[in-house]
Length: 579
Figure 1: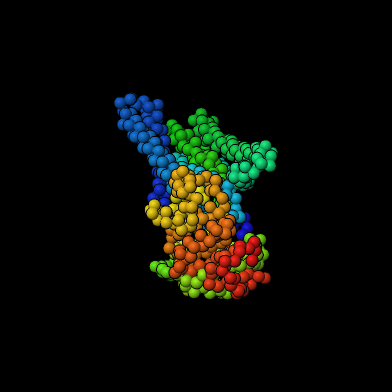
Figure 2: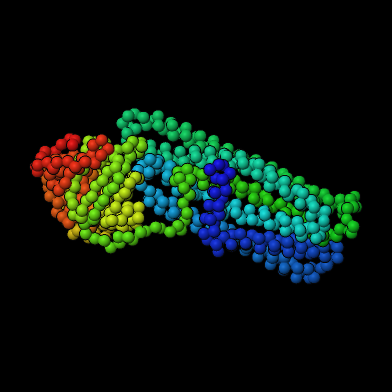
C-alpha cells in the first residue's frame, strides 16, 4: 500500500472513530458553527449601536435595548463556547477509552508467540502514548476543520452583501492561509512521525532495561545502560523540539498573512472614509465600515485556529502509523466478538484429532510436518523427543497459542471455529515456564478459578503436592510470594501452576514437562495426584521422564519432523535427561 493510500485509510479510520458517538460529534461540530452565526449578529448590533451613537447622536436611554441584545448575544456565545469545549473533551476521552479497550482486546486475542516477539514497553506506549496522541485530532482539529471550511465563506458572503470590495479581499487573501498551512503541515507530519517512533523505541528500551536491571547490575553494565537511556532521551527531546519549532514557525507565518488581510480591509475602509479612494457606487456608511472592520479578523480566525491545531492532525497521523506498525492492523472499536458455540455445553473427556499438521518455530524452521494423531476421549498419551524437537510447539498449537497448517479438531470442531471462551473451558495447558504473580500462594492457585473457595484451593494444593512445602511455611497457603515466584524453586513453581489446573474442569489437559524439576520421590507423588485428576479426562503430556511415560496408555516420539508411535517403557523407569 503506497503512502497516499495509507493516508486515506488512516483518515477513514479516524473518521470511523469519531462517528462512534454521533450525538457528541454533532455537538462538537455544530456548536462552534452556531456561535459563528451569532458572531455576525454581534458585529451587526455593535456596528449599528456605534453608528447610532456617533452619527445619529442617540442617547444612552435609546441605546439600552441594543446594549441588552448585545449582552445577550455575548452571553449565549460564551455559553456555546463552553459547551463546545466540554463536548470536545468528552468526545476525545470517549474515543480514547473505546480505542484502548479495542486494542487491549486485540492484544489479548493474539497468540503468545506474537506477543513474545514484541517489546512490552513499545506495546504499552502504543496503548497509552499513541492513543493519547489522537486526543487533539478529535477535541481540537476536527472542530477547527469544520469551522475553517464553512465560516470564512459564510462571512465573506455576508461581507459581499455589505461591500463587494471587502468581500473580494476576503476571497483573495483567505485561501493563502490553507496553502501555506499545507506546506508547513507536510514538514510537521514527518517530524511528528519521527518523534512518535522515537517515543515508542524509548518506552520499549526503558521497560526492557528495567526488567533486566538485576542482570545489568550483575554484569556491571548499569552505568553504561544509564548513559544509553540518557542519550535516547536527549534524542527524543530534540525530535520533540523540532516538531514544536515547525508548529510555532508555521503559526507565525499564518498570523502574518492574517494580519495582512485585516490590514488590507482597514486600509480600504480608512481611505474610503477619507475620500482618498472611491471604488463604490454609493457612500460607505459608518455602520457598514464598522461591520466590515469587525468582521475582518473573524474571517481569518477559523483559518488561524485550524493552523494552530494543524499539528494535532500531523501528530494523530503519526500515532496511527505507529499503532498500525506495532499491531499490524488498526483495531475497530465496538467490533463484534466472534464467539462460536459449536461445542457449547460439552463436558467430559475431549476428543483430539490432528490431521496433516505442520508446525514451524519462530525462526521459520519446520519442526513437524504431516503429523496425524487421534486421541479418543479419556486417552492418556505422552510425546517424547529431544529438546527443541517441537514438543512444546505441538502442545501450544493444540491450545490455540501458535499458528499451524493442517487441521486440529477438538470434539470434532475445527480449532479456528471454536470460540475462545469455549476453547479455554475445554482445554487446560501447563507450559514449561508458568508465571506466578506477587501475592499469596492461594491467590496464585486461585487464578485457575477465581471464585474457588478455601476448601477447593486446599484440595488442589494437596493434589499437586503444594501443601507439602506450603504447610512448612509460617503462613501456609497465605504466604506471600515475590513477582515471578521469587523465593520458590522451579519444581515448587511448577506444582503451584499445576494446582491451578486442578481447580478447573477441562476435557483436555496439556502438560509440558510437568515433573522436570522434581526428584524421583516427589515426582511419584505428583504423578499420583495427576492420575487422580486426569481420570475421565483426555491427557497429552510432553516429557523426558520415563516415570511419566510409564503411566501413559500410549507413547509417541517426534523424530525428523514426524510424529511416530513409540514402545511404552516399563513402569518405574528412571528419569531421563532426553528421550
